[in-house]
Length: 259
Image (tube, rainbow, N blue to C red; front, side, top):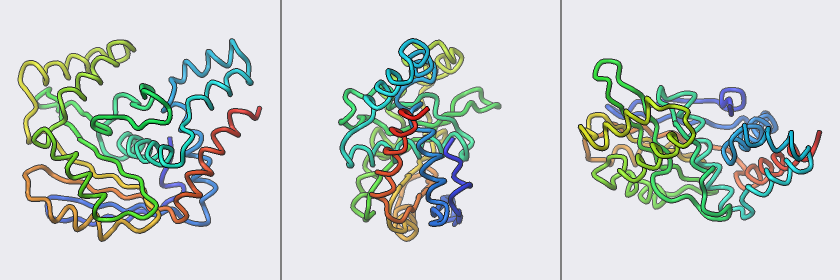
């Protein structure tokens, strides 16, 4: 886990039915943030079991080659991947929902961005026994601007603001292949093919990772939303964004290569 509280300060701002949270990396704890993030990253690109098996069969050098071979090489794709990784980690640790799969394990190519809804959090409503969804768009920018949030809004508004059937089918298929949560597969399929996804069962999460403060931009973006779906805006602000991203991936490679 990234353990945001170990290296970030958080501030919450209610906006009527919506909510903004800004997490700001403490400069004094940047090294902690780099190390915690680097430790969490490999499992987003390969299952822990695959890494352990490679280590057992191929030794440290072979396992290191496997891990580093999965990492994106370009700063832009690394930045985008890290934004999605942070969104996934935040959902699992702080939202009450869980992201059932780590999508980056199924990238078409390490230097390509994933397609479709960035992340979908899910939770089974104990009263209705139906799923509730957290549809998420994650954006990572050195300098976050309104245009980027407008792009995220277009993504959240697709499919009537609901998680796309393609994205839900993708999750269901991956879970079935992994044989790790068959009841969740059944719940997703029920939502897809029996009773549908109701608007009232969906929240939106607009997650940003940036080198400038996202507070005003997230506030404006959520206040401008005219629809019926509850909105969460979460922004991770890390000064020296580009250098931080580079340091994180350098640390992942160093961790893989060092005993």
